[in-house]
Image 1 (tube, rainbow, N blue to C red):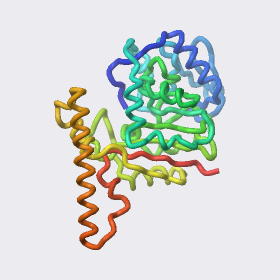
Image 2 (cartoon, helix red, strand yellow; image 1 turned 30 degrees about the vertical axis):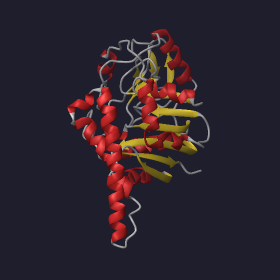
Image 3 (cartoon, rainbow, N blue to C red; image 1 turned 120 degrees about the vertical axis):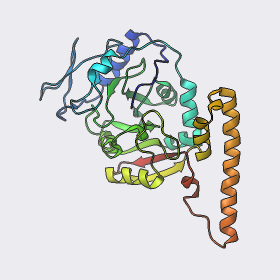
Length: 305
């Protein structure tokens, strides 16, 4: 994953530092270098592992900790050099994410409120999730005003079984090893906890994306990590996903909205024709027909008790 352009900040560095400290110090932390629990704050220099002695610095903006191991392709010095500049918080964009294909329904009925937001961006998701009653810890690969820490999703700086829920929205396609990232999410979830996520399938390449997975690929990644009760739904359609990026005029907001509405209508018509064709042949439409042509996939999976 790579940082987007600098955008969206509404809190001061001081407020950000207090938020990060309050959120992280309430959790048991784990050293991403050696895997030992007991990572401790060593003010004012950052955090240090009591076992291997590894030190983890803080970004100048709000003192946001940077937990990256020597194995990660992400570099601590690059993160520390990243300049955070004020802009408007994108909560509306986060809301659109959660309203796409009824993704927010997958959060209903989850047990507990302590939530880890993987790949939080500039924090719009955090505000939306907090409004819906969750206590949020958020990370990404770059700092922002609503980021608790910077880390690599393949090596999480949290001890085992810290969270009731983990959310990962449009992140898995940007991970170079989704199997390892899924294992890490499984590790930090409490027993009975749920992962709610979305991932690209027929979306075009974007922002250094690695793996765009079918529903079979998503299920395999989560099954190997140990998850059960894996529910997979279609997100937006393949037509919307392709046309939104391919046609340059869709970069204009009002044109994009009209274009996507037409694509949704065309997609429903196309699926209807496929179902009709199956029936004319005396066959039942396949259960995965909607998933076959999905631009993205939405998933809920549970860590067994």
